[in-house]
Every structure is written in structure tokens, then in C-alpha cells.
Image 1: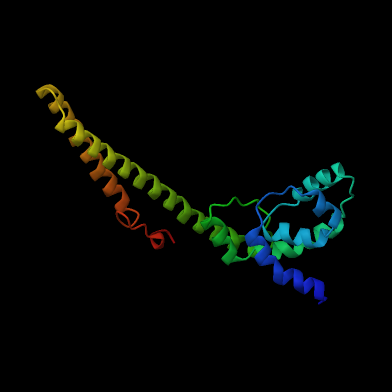
Image 2: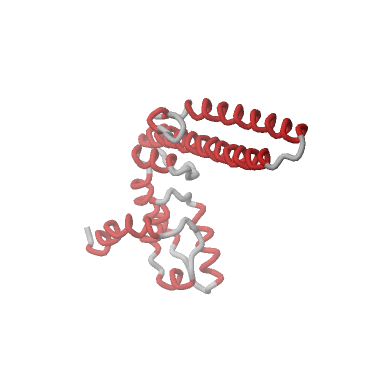
Length: 193
């Protein structure tokens, strides 16, 4: 394997970690013309082949011709890196979209693991929403208790106590809901594997 290809494959994971998910290309990147390498990067991110047309359109605006054949060859190599069962789980666990780029024997394994990872991600998001509601209710209880100390009439105090009881019931309900996810303050992703 040529040295520049090896360097690209070694540097790619670090570059992917630092780079954003944007498919748009800069003028400098168009001028550099590293189409094969760019194809590897886009494939390893799970981007579809439609990406090359977006790149070509943007580079055309800069007066640069895109080597789509080189990009496609690189994209194939990148897709091989992307379409592993392990990466399927990682992509789903991060809540990233899957553009349906995997084909062949690994496609089913990738998709099954992607769906498992996505289920964990979605459960974690649901748990976080319940936790936010709980803390919101807890703050409201504190506000109501403070208002109760300053109540000027029996009717106002009665209404505030009733509101507090409702908030405490809501908090107990939210705690019970959080138990499905491992308990209050203890999201357990293992429950969703």
C-alpha cells in the first residue's frame, strides 16, 4: 500500500473526530482536490453518494472541477469502514441518522446494531426528559412552600397546599416512570440492549 494511502487511513479517525458533519466543502478543499481522500472521509461518516453532487456543485461555484470517479472509489473504501456491526451500534447510540449506505452481507448486522444503539439513545432521551420534569416540579414545590409561608388568607393557603399535593403526586409518578429506566438518577443503558 502506498505511503499516502496508509497515512490517510491512519489520520482518518482523528480527522473524523475533529471534523464536523457538514457535507459542504470549502474553496481551499476544492482547490486541494484530494477527491479520493475526501471520498474515504465521507464514506467513513456514512454519507450517501449524493454527497459528491453537493460537493461538485459547490466546487463548480469556485471554478473547480471535481473528480467524481476518484471520490466514488474513496467512498467505497470509506463505506467499508463505516458498515461494521460495531459502528452500527455507535452510530445509533449517538442518535445519528443512517442514510442507508450499507449493502451486502454486513448491511443486516449494521442495521440490527444501529437499531439497538438507537433504542438506547431514545430511552436515554426519554429518561432525561422525565428527569427535567421532576426537577421542574421540585423547584415549583419549593416556590409553593415559600408562597405558603407568606399566604395572607386561609383560602390562599388551602389552594397552595392543594397545589403542593398535586406537585408531590406528579413527582412520585415521575419517579415511578424513571424506575423503568433504572431508577431515579440512575439511567441504566443495559436495560435496553
